Image 1: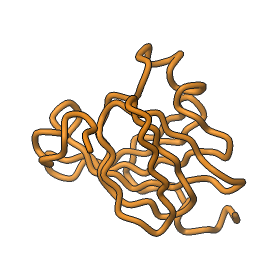
Image 2: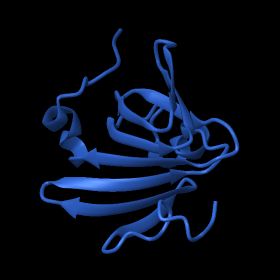
Image 3: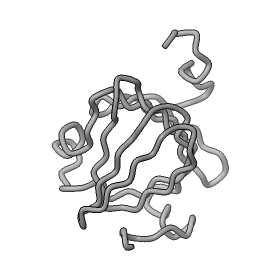
Image 4: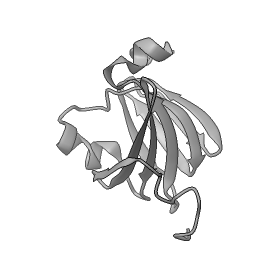
Length: 128
């Protein structure tokens, strides 16, 4: 991917940081945070983020749009979901996630920090 790729250009007015190898940019829009996360090839939450976060699984809900790449989500009950761009995503808390293939995964996410589940009406945990 080219540095001139508009999907990867720096977001105007964004708070930027890197955590666990993930490039994260956050812009506030009213009460909501709009985030662009760029997950590198080979990223796996349980390997890259678990040591930083300290929980066995990602306990955050993710709602947004997978703009590029392929992501595999595994829930504690063994359920596996493959997401391939372009795709709207809604990922329940309590998951491990990994980037599949040699392309970064680019996610545009909308959240309300600790109130995402309640405010967006998504499940508090994965169920079939």
